Structures are given as structure tokens and as C-alpha cells.
Image: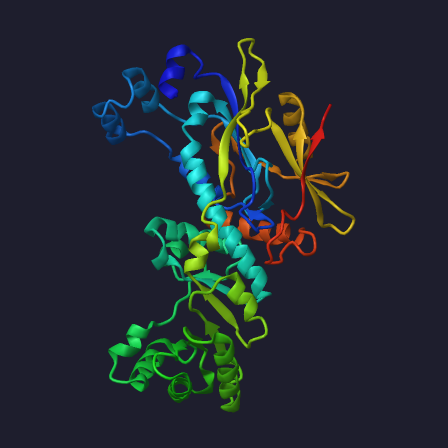
Length: 432
């Protein structure tokens, strides 16, 4: 596309691309936008260096004119979108990219690969932290994902309310709280369970978490208390009927006077298993496989569509795809959420009008709430420069706070795990 557009002169036409999803995964009532900070980090460094250009030339992928363009590629346009951590609903543009066709079209795979995965993980994580009802959820999925995706998943989980991650690289890169426990291998390494627990307590202190189900849970708890005393930080259960075992272990700990020793449960948990443990005396949940695979919805189905472009006259013109079942709404659109008197979401609003009208509305309504509408688009990139505070550890902290506030706006019942439609409808608000 780039090569042909450079050749016919349309590559430098001003264009607007929008990222949105046509529908939520089956049964989901809302999605969570995550990965925006990662997109912005990569956008700032999105370049074609000598190795890439040499390969493109040797493989005859593009012609010399295109290679010359790519050698000097820099994104100099603008990006607005939902703040990372916002909940989202179908059809509303979570990201809007404006620049020349040549600049913007090259970003499609980068943007979608990040947002689709990170948002799938965050959407699952939000359901899990909702089901946990205030009990901490801990990310432990690195061994169930690609090594780079594991770091992204840890970040997305924290955006959606997870309290920490076992992924140390994610902790280093994004300032996340890191956690971890010993595995069964550590117990099996030693001649007996007593020796393993004594070694761990000597190394980590009595506040450590001991894995007590390698052999027999009751005997494991006895040995854990013998090693650490009633100051033992926590025990971990990783198999069996977790609800029954948690009840029995809590009674055993309390009988021994270890009232402050917590119970951590793991073992293929998802949001439904977490909800089923709501009445069990569990203090925190370690979640792995279901989290990093989106708990059955490993992508959000986001698309990157051209909605407006500069015409031959120089004016911006709406364009739209008309394919059956894959239609889109042409023209740049603003985004807002209508809140009721109780502060809860009633509608997701697409603001439609001319390109200039929508741009003016978005600028005017930034960080304002009028007529019950909360504008959702915030500036992310201006003239190619990423806005401060949106990346690295600072960006994660801001996204985590935004998600908590955004989820609190959902109508009552929106956080139920039972299958249903989107929690609020998406409607259009014409400006003219």
C-alpha cells in the first residue's frame, strides 16, 4: 500500500484512522483498554534501521523510492484516545491516529498487536479482581505465555487491579510490586519437608509463604508452624478442593494461635473459581494461565480503520467500509460517556459531525463534564511528541487509578460474571 501510494501521490494525504471493536467477546459486559503506554513507548522508537532496510531490499519487498521513505520515517502526527485503564464498549474509538497516510498506515500492526493482547488480559484481570471483592490477586502467568507477552501481561494485569506480579522483568521495567513463593521442587530437593521449610525460613524469615501441599496438607501446616511459629506469613495451597482445604487450614492455623498467618491459593484459577471461593477463608489468589490467555478471550477484536482522508480539494472527507457485517461509520468521531444522576454510566456516546466540528468539540470538552457527558478522548501524541506521564512506571500508576475510577462508573450488575450484553449501549450524538 505504501509503495503504491508513494508512486501515485496519495501517500501524503492527511488521514484519520480509528481503533475500535465491533463487539465484545461472547458473554462479556465491558472491555478494559490496556497497552496504550506500551504503544507510545514503541512509537517513539519506531524506526527502520540499516538491518531492516537491507533485508527489505535484498528480499525485494519494496522499491528504492519506498526504501528511501522508510529510511527517514518518523511519525509526526497526532494521537488522541481513551486514557489507558478506561472501560470501553463496541464501536467507540479507543484510539484515533491522524497523520499522512504513509505515516499512519505503517502503525496498524504495531497498534493492534499491543492493544488487542494487553486489553484482553486487562479485561480478564478486571473480572478477576471484581470477583475477588477486595482480596489481592497476584499475577503468576509468565510460564504460560511468550517471554515478551509475559511482561506485557503482568503490566496489563496491574492496570486492572492486580496487586503484584511474579515477573521480575515487568517489575523492573514498570515499577510493579513483585511477589513469589517456593515451588514443589524446593521441597522435593530436600530430604524431608521439615528440612525444606527450615531452610526457607532461615533464608527468608518467618514472614515467608510456605507451600504446604507437596505431601499431606495437615502435616504440611504442622511442619510450617514448627519451622516459623505463629509469625508465619502465609501458607500456599496449590491443589485439591481449595474451598474445603482453606476452611480446614484456617481452623488449624487459628487453633495453633497463628491468626495472622494468611492463606494463598493457586492452581489454575479464573474469575469463576475466584468467585466460588468468595466465602472461603482465602486471603489472596495467584492466577496464571487464565489471566495471560484472556480467560477464554485472547484478543479484543480491535480493528484499525480509515474513517477520513484529505480529498483532491484539500478538505477532509469521511470514508467508510460498507462490507456486509463489517460496516463502519465514516468520519472522525469524538467519544464520551453519559452519566446518570448517581454517577453511573448510562450510554457510550459517539460524537459525530464534520471533521472540524468533532476536533473542536474534543478540544473543548477535554477534562470537562457537561450535560452528564464525560469526554473520553485525551491527547496522547501531539506533532509526533508523546505527552508526558503516559509511559513507564508513571503511566502504569495513572492507568491503574483510571481503571478503578472507570469501573466504579459502571451500572449496577455490569460486573456480574453471567453472560449478558454490553453493560451500556453505544449511541450517536450529532453535532449539527
